[in-house]
Length: 225
Image (cartoon, one colour):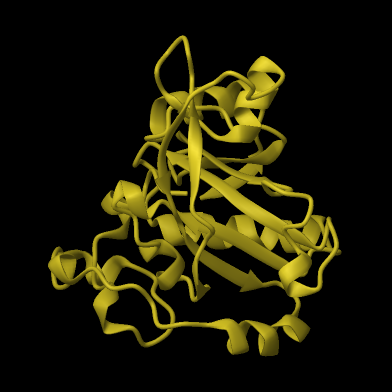
């Protein structure tokens, strides 16, 4: 498996075809994922975050915190946790000023952040509830940032249902670990999925000691992010 800088063409295709949101996030960069057969499997995208103040709760400035925005993969990548881990190593190497990663699981889409749990991210609670903008031409939901990028503003546009996400963080700087530890909360559990697909558990690289993670992450998380 290998990762390389993703082209804009690869990013667009993966986001529109491999991710449930079927939308292009703005102001992102990322990596194309290739499996051991050298087949392209999609992209993993990072960005500066939805707000200029995204690092404020952690005492960080812009550039010191980066958001994992998308994992738009087609399922051929093998172990999804390995893809994520490789991308995180690249971030640490290529952006040495970054001290913390943050990401959100779309709870309203049935995502609990299982892949973050499997790679030892810290769960720190729910994000502030917000509503997405309804695209007047497609009827699909857009993040406010995407709507502004597409139409210039959100004035006159309708909003969808108010929703919230589950927030996870991961320290790239060991000095951030005490703060992460102080903020962490118990992982959200998916009771109905516990013990499913145990036959695949042995192939999943899981760190930590959470016994509820014996799930088929390859199938359940290939489009997550």
